[in-house]
Image 1 (tube, rainbow, N blue to C red):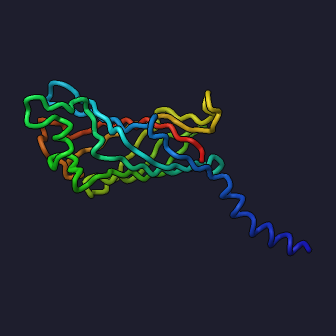
Image 2 (tube, helix red, strand yellow):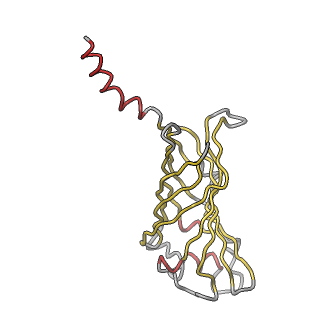
Image 3 (spheres, rainbow, N blue to C red):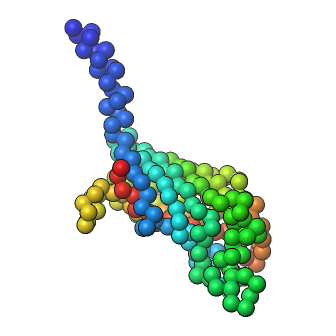
Length: 194
């Protein structure tokens, strides 16, 4: 009888461990990938991607998690979409082959592992795929909070993370060095527990 109980316990352990993994879906209305880049040495241009989707997992007991984020490249928005008398607006140019080449590469993806320190997440170490090139990117978690939504009471996690990348590493060379190579990233997110 003891042997049967031991075998049953051994078989149940993997299922008990996986029950601690929580799944989350990114809220696209409150989650944005923002960026800044130097422009001609005179100013900084701010932009964001208006459309993204994703999933995340958190295992608090094991102190680990994962992120899988998809960004619609054509949703890039720097606040300049009206071309006026120009041949094209800045946002139209960013969608063209010189920059994001959205016709050939409609999506940008980021897949990473969440690293924990103390009570919360401290970083996301992952792989960013942009223009068909995949490179490592590390995002530092500036804020991390999980708990009930104050109005709906639904379980959620949110925060924001920052990082940097060189666009030339992904083959985006137009305008360098006048238009900066280094891109500062700020990822703001909210995700609801599934």
